[in-house]
Length: 493
Ligand code: NAP
Ligand code: MG
Image 1 (cartoon, rainbow, N blue to C red):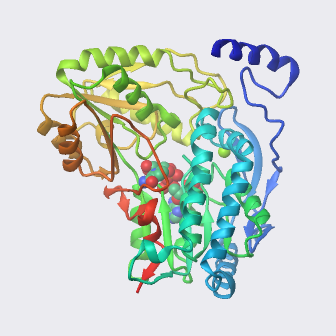
Image 2: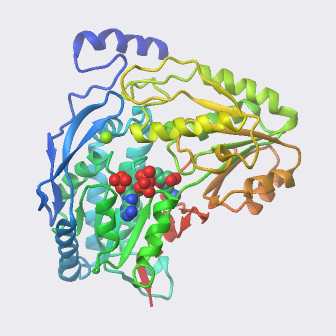
Image 3: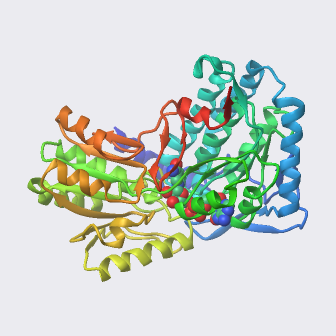
């Protein structure tokens, strides 16, 4: 039945709609402008210096639109508009009124979910199945969740008064562009802050569409400002004197730099940084289920996932079976057009990221690792990388220690529970982890002893707005999601 439906779609698709790919999502229904300006004080305005940069589709290297680049003067304008909105309207508004605006954003986002999914996949390269089923629904779920908290902060922080911080500068990465924007905006707004958001340079478009939603929701001007640009634009925001808080999601390298920049300034900060998660398969696990879990842990979103299970530890007795089943499964993964709903692995987000992945794969080989890559065909144009695993690697190898942020898995074996806990903790990161076993006692022991913010048992990469997400060690400071996500935006008295 399923196959029949797919065949029907395929055969009619090309005849009926020239804009439709094989089993692909139509792009007829999306509305994109050729040029996007900065979103400041509720309006789209050109940058003071008049500079624009292109955002491209990484699956075909074609330009989608050009986007205004914010310089220092634009950041000044955006911050002062956020300050004015904070002083005059947003911090004075009854919390339940603030909540209504956030509910409105959530609903509008839900109504435009299809359009948002297609644009997210075009701009960033992720498979439509993921943007449609994960990124976009989770984004609206975040707005719904925090909208509900807006007038209940006294229950989130019993016996305390939660005052907003003021103006927040928020900087996000390219791997989950809309979702990261939702993680930043929703709790900041619910707690009464105003903000200036800087999306990543390669994926500005869904943030610009979100700006349109914010206009439609009639949010008071200046409460949300969205400014695009590269790292330099982010720096202007971090160093601005009238910002009360910096919320950053990105690499550990830039996170450390931000920490140094804000030291002594009185600015609060939360940092959601990199990861190198251990995914552990015990002999008593349901092996077929675990193999699916490995695939999801490392190949979801092309491995561009901070909490990706990029270090696999398999107990010796099942190592051969797991690796051979994994290789077989890798052969069935479809790499290709992000807008095709059958695609499992989309395009690598940028040429720069592709080069980084290639550099690490060469390093892995030079260090003596044995490589296995899926033999799937890769499209000629665009940025692609085949699913890749390495065996014969050890803890000291760079591909085991450093975050690659691509579809590349380093596999090692272990004998005992204590050994694998030691190995899992032997990392500068501590964002996430996973284990596969049918023994509850092992789940309790391992989750207690591994130093990571989130650990999944017999599943991986599951997210919920009510569940906090944050890292130990070099994976960050503070958490997003849940009540913890509110506390990063309030002064408790
Ligand atoms: P990145 O290079 O650190 O960039 C993140 C954001 O910071 C981008 O908007 C970037 O602008 C901007 N930026 C770059 N240099 C800056 C500077 N000196 N000052 C201020 N802002 C600056 O990270 P990425 O490559 O975009 O994202 C991948 C990283 O994010 C990975 O390490 C991943 O693990 C991490 N991540 C963490 C989480 C989490 O929740 N812990 C979630 C998702 C991703 P440009 O785009 O123009 O460079
Ligand atoms: Mg792009």
